[in-house]
Length: 258
Image (cartoon, rainbow, N blue to C red; front, top):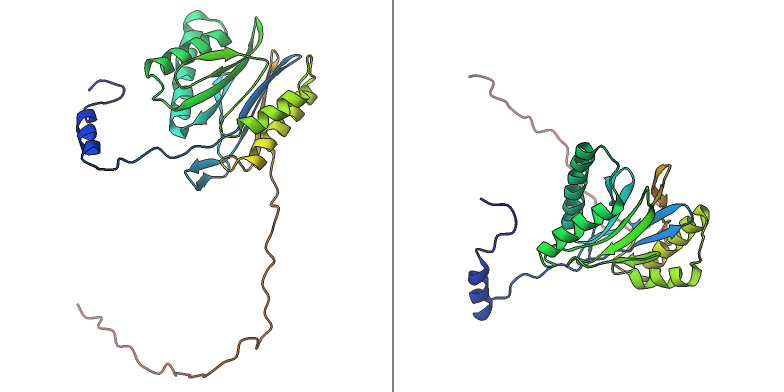
């Protein structure tokens, strides 16, 4: 059996659809992921809600994936696709590092990711934000599921991207400091969390510089806006209509003989 997608049932599925059978559709996904270049590195951010259509499947999942020590990647779309795509490229880049004896460049990771996604023509549901720092400087790219890419100073993706982009466009400036970039990324993710039902829970932040990477897991933990009060009823609030006491006097016989 060869690796990759299996299209053996394509003709069967087409005939079933023509006969009126309703094929199962993909579940709606939801995410807010962002990235920004500042004066000294790159800051990536993501929410932590994983959804299955209208259901919150995981309140604290990780959407910022390790690629190499100097490169990380945010993923939006189908969780399995983003996990396996980034893990595959991470493995290939580690082999590349061992073969060359050099730190991988961000453009190398970008090329490998876009070639993989383009090969499957968008059927891998992975919208990615790739950020990293190498000997040529700090780099930030977004990668669409069909393989097209852009290099930008700041970028948002996912169902909450419009709210996050509004925050970026209002607050971005050249030569941001590290603290300013982290605050802006946090505010952008919060905008996605509060304005998009598919995004929620906490804020994850990762800072990449030439001196190393700082992973700030659960950088901001969302507090519950409403906590229902505990119920307390005084004894006798509910009337007892009748009461019957059955004494436990029945003997239980056990046969221990074999």
